[in-house]
Amino acid sequence: MKVAIIDFDDSFTFNIYSILKDLRVEAYVIDFKKVQIDFLSDFTHVLLGPGPGHVDDYDSIFPLVDKLILDSLSERYKLLGICLGHQLIHYRLGREIKLLNSPIHGQSFKFKFPISEYLSKELQDNELQLQFYNSWGVVNEKSNLDFDLEIHGHSDEIIASFSKNITTYQFHCESVGTSCQRDLFHQMLV
Image 1: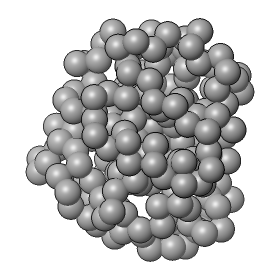
Image 2 (image 1 turned 90 degrees about the vertical axis):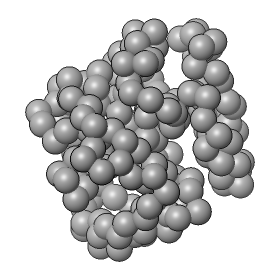
Image 3 (image 1 turned 120 degrees about the vertical axis):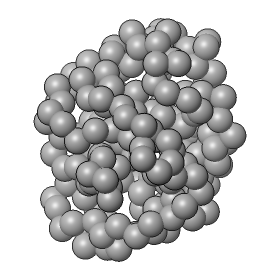
């Protein structure tokens, strides 16, 4: 397993890198301003990391995200998204990204994950503490991809989505305010 972490100038990127290294995953951080699709040919997983701002601030990377989505659907990569990465993937799949009524920065909330064949046994029927750092959310509306499972937040925004080759989290699974970090990363990687 070899993971490319696309860095959107966010310090949490290196928390992600550290956890992946602790899990004995070969991981590399690549600056979003320098990444090209041919750089990624040797990777099994591509993780779009967190970052500041709105998805429109990153319009230069939209063609790459579109290609990564198509490649993941054809099973070339497993595509992962955390926070901004989660929003970028959903935005390119046709969903709206909306300013939250109350931005969430450094707050943790409990969410019960359902019993589902799409989740690892460690996450099923488990109440997790999830830490958020976001002003924007993915609106729960029709998408160009039917995810196998989606988990909704308190304002019905999408906070996690799971399919065979695309997994995204709005919350920061690498943050100290999130429980079961290893299980959440394991879910993304398998």
